[in-house]
Image (cartoon, rainbow, N blue to C red):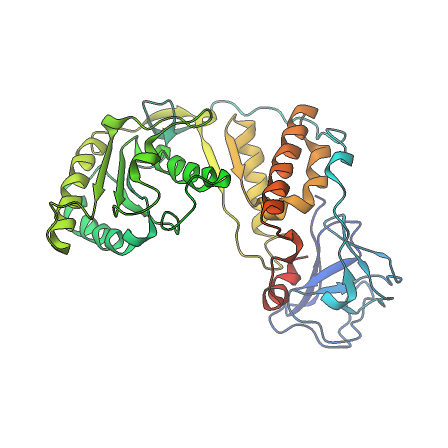
Length: 379
């Protein structure tokens, strides 16, 4: 990405142009800019433009390309004069090109020199992973137990954690799955695998604690089972508490049982010790931030730059958001490091397309109008 260009007339009136080839920019100041605002480059607004929305830097003809980040993000429904507010009604989004037509590894960025000698103080685990924190993770097999787990987490933080100073905290892993689901449906593997893998987060030190209700479709034992691409959870390192166990007499009995099990795991976690590890053993996950107009010129470039540094150290960086990547995949496959990686990207997108097709879901229709009104600024 080229250097971000800021054009400013006064401290309260400026816009941001991201790429040299862009023909739009975003208005930055809190209340937008009024008609008649003029910038040093001669641009004059012909109407009020809200904060975070796009302004046309050039005259854009009907059906002309609207370019941001150096990429075509849409086409003009009608002619758009320079200085106009470009809102949703004035843009038609381009159709995503068919996956089989996408180029692979045709614009591979030049490799950056490796960064050597960088380390961090981490926790090594028996499975070879390395954590950056020392946490007790409490997995749930069904959303019905979330209230109990949230309550117990507070008790653990108040009464147990002070006894184990080497443990950083406790995390309840609540979710909305497990009850009344088609547990053997083909796609059920996705949420089950996700919950399973979160239980094995390196920060949990291999200590797996599962809270279930007893009547759920997703029985806790099922979360321990491995598959071809998922390692099994050793029974000896896992504990299961069923709230409907006959030995429980009332709410307090359930809580006391969970606390006893939690303390056994805390005792083990408290023995973990940090050691110096090469930065190449870091695995960093990226979380989608706010879909606002400024994430693309603030957080995203910063995170991308940091990711490049981590990869140069040999570390691994992951991001999800397949829903957003899907129709931008044509921007990524040319930059894949080789054709094999490009094909893997396409395979993931094909899986997603097939998943949506099974549910007769249109991937382009996943935003309500109110959401589009807020998010449209991003583009």
